[in-house]
Length: 462
Ligand SMILES: Cc1cc2nc3c(=O)[nH]c(=O)nc-3n(C[C@H](O)[C@H](O)[C@H](O)COP(=O)(O)O)c2cc1C
Image (cartoon, rainbow, N blue to C red; front, side):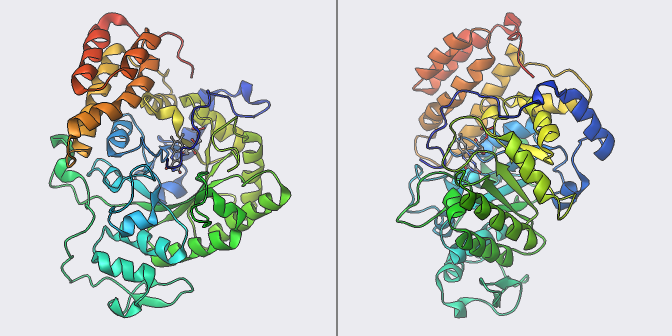
């Protein structure tokens, strides 16, 4: 069930007393004046070239595969995070782990040159496993699968001598020999080969991860009494051991970041734990944290607390006023991105449920930055994105048996969300819910999206 134990809560505005009067267009204009056309703080642009606007597509288990990411990018999203991948899934090359557990490997390898820059997100219980998995992602499986497993599970003799790689505690154990031929990777290096022609230009260098993101936020219960994800917030020493191990293993030129909840719950002890972990992360060189303004206990239920996020940002910035911090929680419209930035002081916002079936949120955010009026998608644009998303999803699933029927079924959940933009939204939604095949999917498009004069849905909130 991944990181998604309860996502069915209705849209709720965040708790942010006094935020009603914020004008997103004015905030966007101010960011452009301060930081240039994309409005992103220069420190982040330096860390991740291409991350040029103050928002990104969050990791969304079950949704944010290469297809969804590419659609988002074509609408102006500057940066994406993979679904949370279990460290053991990465080390095992995907074998032996059910898709239902967490994101599948094939959904999360970079989708060619167009799927850049991309952060690979990892979740796990053991520092050495996390470190080896992070290194494998960074290096794109340039060593043999066995070698990465040795890193995770022991037998240091197996490593080549010299170099940057250290085990938790700082012991230097090996590095890549740049002259050696890479072994045939046990994990696909990228989706170039299976992408549609526009995304498979062989002149594009092999895709890789621009950053490694550690998940300390997933609320799904611990497995076998071992903490992982957000449950580390109740065990700060363990969380710090993981952060240290990963930072030491990943080459220093690759930024490490973390996704964290604002606390495990609202007790003073847990709030203190949050600070212990956050302070440690920044002091060991983590480039930024994305803070989800709900507690782990809250899962996805109820509003996020932008008021508390604002307090966190103020305290975290005492050590360094330019410290990048991203916020997550209740970003439903393009305007919310700039409301959150203004209200809380975050560097940028992570867009999560608000972009499922709504890549136009990124276009609208870019329009606000350009001083334009954000436009809702026309019927013709909706149809074209539905078809494009389907085609990309087919390419992502190409290696599977029954790729077409699998894609038809999985696209249903996107169709249901895309329907929200249609003037006959409820009717379209009901039809998408009934889709079981590719033909039925196409039937819905023919019936509801053929008439490009059908108009746009009025009153889309910004
Ligand atoms: C279906 C679903 C899957 C998610 N998967 C992940 C994930 O894999 N990694 C992650 O960091 N966050 C994940 N999240 C959390 C979101 O990134 C985000 O922090 C959260 O939904 C709050 O933002 P929102 O209220 O704007 O949706 C997931 C959330 C949902 C609803």
